[in-house]
Image (cartoon, rainbow over all chains, first blue to last red; front, side, top):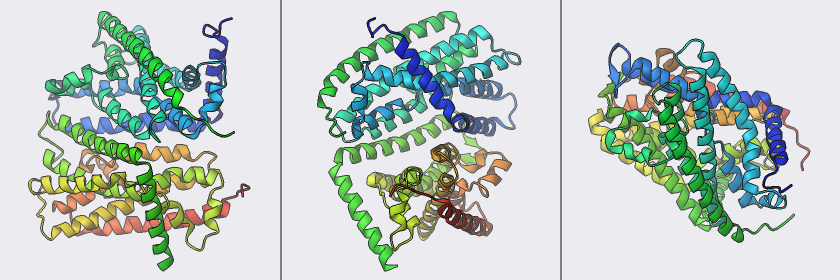
Length: 267
Length: 261
């Protein structure tokens, strides 16, 4: 069977990724806890500080309850976005361990993605379970949660493709770490993880609207909260798929050109 | 002490040479660090475009706090960040062996060996922010600039001790990197003024996890909003932290085993 259509190696790679994550269960959970709970806790304290003692008042048009709902809901999606696969990729290029992957009869980029997808699917399952429990107590519904998870997973693909495009800088520079750090910092601000993007002043809103980053956390959160109805969700999924196509083509081109510069010397 | 100074000078020279060899990387890292400052400022700019003050902290005071925080953080990043990042790997892979055989403190060698010059601009930028927002934040300037130096160094010492506290567990854990990474999550508590947090968290940030000494307490002291007790508290807590870490380090070294050499 043509390996480009073969699902077996892909499923096997994802399974390996899941096993790898579960091999260090305690650390997986600690990592998840640290990267999810602490930032959310800080946001909750910030909104409380701003609106404490002013019941009924609002912040950038959002009430205290809305800010709380946004923060808690964004927690479900902030862990699905991104990951550090692009950092792994630049390390492979820098240290020459990319050799091991180039020798395999599968695409490097796809292989790295599926390897990381195992852990991401575990995280998604965990977040989905939390969301499903939340449907019992809040206005969140299962269909909305599923739609939002779909958008978040699409955001994860976009994040990976974009990270890989930047990672190709490693073929030209000694180290592309800085490029990815800048990307991460910009994404953290414009994905809606730190603040709801609706509070960004109108004159600056074009900045985040022109990037796909809002599809990572802000978009899914809006869907889950019911702020975006099905038609908006469909439109945003379409926009997301266009970003995937554009980044996919761009990645194919830059990778094809850059890989010629790669020299893996040694055993 | 002479040996330590010589080691430091050699380390400084070697790292400077490396930065010049990998120029593109150094420039890129400098840009990344500047973007980090811009993001920090942009975050509060967005917040303060919607409100006048948060728990008694207005925009100028928060930016003044950020200036102090950025200055002390840049010193830590310059001298210690990379060494602490690689520390868990060094213990796990047995590379600490080499340092244990040297006639100077292995802790000094382990934490002072990888210097990163890309953050030097941030120190200047941090001090510029302090200078720019100081008058409107209540900072008197003049001789008080000496206190800025003092508090920046306190911030550096605090970050060193807390960072060390998060990596020391590598001697007892299989993969200490997770706990080490957890530091960066809690670090987010430091880059916001403590006045934004509830009382309990403020207490925590001045005792068990003294992130407040990296920016909040210094900014409050420099703006004349704190008492002499703040100074006392800083010395007591950092002293306790130092003693605790010294004992943990010794216990960790006793536990350390390596078959790599």
